[in-house]
Length: 115
Image 1: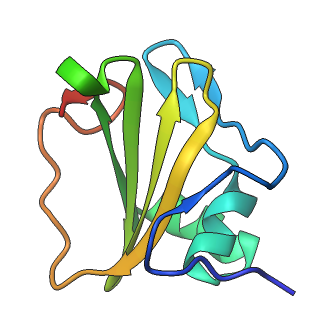
Image 2: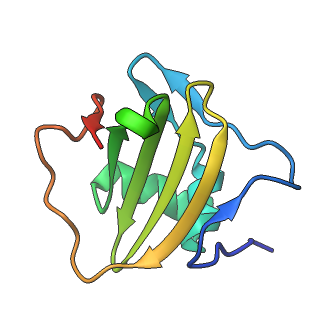
Image 3: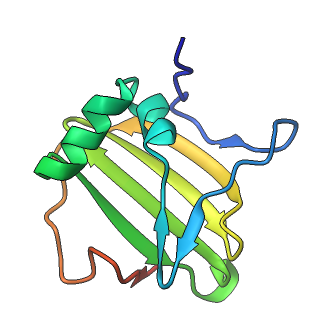
């Protein structure tokens, strides 16, 4: 049975350490993690990523958030977000409804925008 993420932030404290693999300037997020966040089968997540119906945005922290990245995924009317440190350790994660999907910008893709 898949675990559904709650709308509020859930820290990794008290649970097994969750990590997301770094890949140069970007990250590789396991489909299983996204499937849990969106309450979808893994195969449907993989298909949504291939077809572009699931999109993502990567933002690098500045100032007080230096050394952290915000990874946000959008699918339909839902989004999920992971805040990770320089080692890819998930510090917080959340899932929430959205009104509209934000347009892809030049900062989307492999490079991270500033946050």
